Amino acid sequence: MITNKWKKTLRQLQQKKYRKQLGLFVVEGRKMVEECLRFAAERIEQVFAIEHLCSAWQQAFPEVHIEAASGSDIQACSALQNNQEALAVLRIDSSGNDLPQQWSQSLFVYLDHIQDPGNMGTIMRICDWYGLPSLLVSEDTVDVWNTKTIQASKGSFLRVKVYYCSMERLLETMPPKTVIWGAELQGKDIHTIKPREHNNTAPLILVMGNEANGIRDTTRKFIDEYITIPRYGAAESLNVAMATAILVDNLKRVGY
Image (cartoon, rainbow, N blue to C red; front, side, top):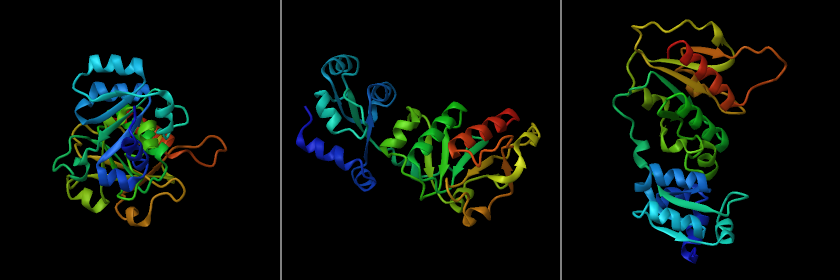
């Protein structure tokens, strides 16, 4: 069963200040919890699951603390509209505050003040799909450990590491020839970008702006060039996650 103490903690973890204070976050749903058991068991603090899942998981993952709970109890503690099977509490990986001194990626996505957790989680999933293990975000971008962000990532949060940093701080750790491109409607057509030369080892940072206001002036001063997705129809704009996927696909296609 879920004790009153855990019920209180689970409610608190729906708020950023408590996630930060306790160093914990919540993962919900059978599929997501099972992925955590398989790939991040060492980070799991507690799992609650309905009886048959609890029995199966206790046998498969004896090192993890798993307790049986009723579907109604799980739903009552859930931030999702329909979750009566499982939820897990995991420890936050705090190393995202420390930028590496050397980067192995050639292409990075940088999110400038992205506020929608669904967009954030989807962009993590996009990075995972295209083999980008690091995602860079401004310090005021939505919390990666937000339950909606975690759900939207579909497990990619286990493979994509998010670094919160200002552009100034980031560039201190990047090679001096790093190139920064910003996504903007009036930018250069992404379809006209030439293939990357084989001897070009400088990283490329793709900056994606806020859903409503685009890239901020404080970030614009670092951008070398603007790129865009050509529009053939009448839509006013694209969702930032959708635009990120299209731009990253095109950049990977020409060798980044």
